[in-house]
Image (cartoon, rainbow, N blue to C red; front, side, top):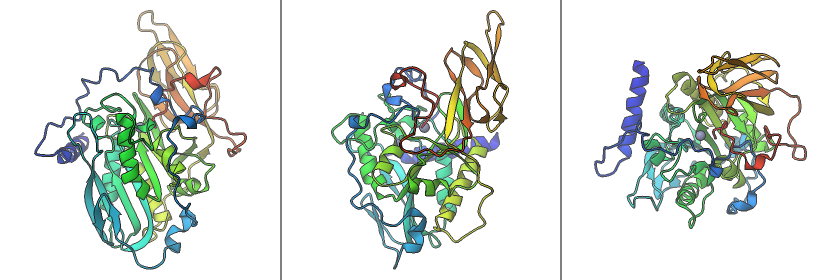
Length: 425
Ligand SMILES: [Zn+2]
């Protein structure tokens, strides 16, 4: 508990450091004003389970000027000559040094600039630029601490390439303890953004143009959403070879194939020629030390496998790759108590949990329709019928191919209008 409190203090200090002009009224725990948090009619928040068939709705992203000729896996060995200064946000970061910069979107709700730290480490040797983004959803805290640990563990004198870490992308949501922006839009449905669009689209555009476009690869850190937690896992579109290279670098981490939803940072970055994956670990509104350590180990292993730091012993046996997954939903309302935990292996027919009606004491069992592994699940809570309670990774031998690919977990009816709240990215 003392450790958790210490982490909270660190987060608070980090937040306080963001404020301009001595403003210190930062209360990350205050979500009292977030009265619309649980509305589920949010078409912006459609999950990555939904088919990516609405590309025309999104501003076309400027495609990368020249697609990188060198595969990501060879980026360090192919880098020739001396490391160059890194130009970012109007600053010049010399090779072998680290700097703390700040980014703020040009237009904000209150007319008052709010900036957020951008940690930059430019290595002494040439190589790719890896970006780490966290708290695109303001209530997802584990990634904030992961970025801090990774950035402070690296020695710029030994790194080949650069690492850019943004611990809190959605600083306004973070301050309110909310997943959303103050207008309750989900920032992670607006990338790559639009300079003339909604507030969310403008913030997304500023971030994408000024920071993300400088990356050669990106890891976006998330947690489960709405009282759900995820087993530490990488979500990636395994049809893209450079994305596959990224996923193979994390060591002992479950990999889940998932086609990114339109507007997510992962989707927009990959479309712009920057291979990107999502790292999910734990649940929202908490700092979970085991999940943080797992994520940090995964990212440090990635930096190692990409050749950006001198080789250390690599981490563990690779975990399975899940090409399919499905959410098991509650058929009854009541008190959900789980019989399994994150990472449990389950067989078809196994009891995952029970739902008890608190009024008449009627009890129903939630059973798994699949054999597989629990890669995400709801915390114990009161649920309504239809609530996505257990996320089961299903092992299959078949890798996804473009023609036969189906979105993960299509509903039996028209899924395109469904808000699926179980995924979190
Ligand atoms: Zn998220």
